[in-house]
Length: 52
Image (tube, rainbow, N blue to C red; front, side, top):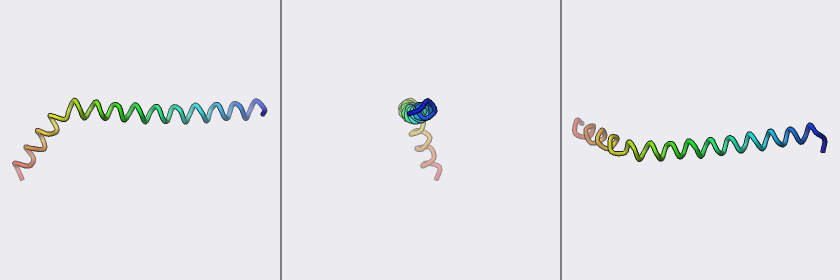
């Protein structure tokens, strides 16, 4: 393999890894957000049900 194809493979691997790690980070943030705000969201939903 020449130098250019090795660079391309390294770039592709880096991009895929960054994409996967970003997805995991977003999922983690979503879980944290849901745990922190679950009580507030539930309260808002209850108020919304009462008004309907």
